Length: 104
Image 1: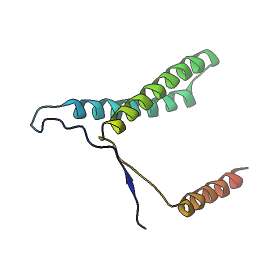
Image 2: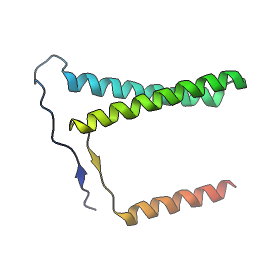
Image 3: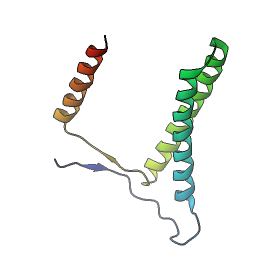
């Protein structure tokens, strides 16, 4: 299946052994993604409502930061996404709906 890549023109950065703006941004983006994963675990394991609500606020803030960093990386051409055919998307949705029905 052929895929199409969606990417903005890349903002050039120095290519040497030192970290550059691209390296820093992608490193922070990866860290934020890991924080979000860890916060999801914390939400699932929160022992009381007050703790859960605090974790939820933090998770929401992390999600917003992640989105802003992703948008910046994409805008600068440092993050590429791929398109999928609509038939593949529908197939995936159908599989997930089937699994959801099995859980009911």
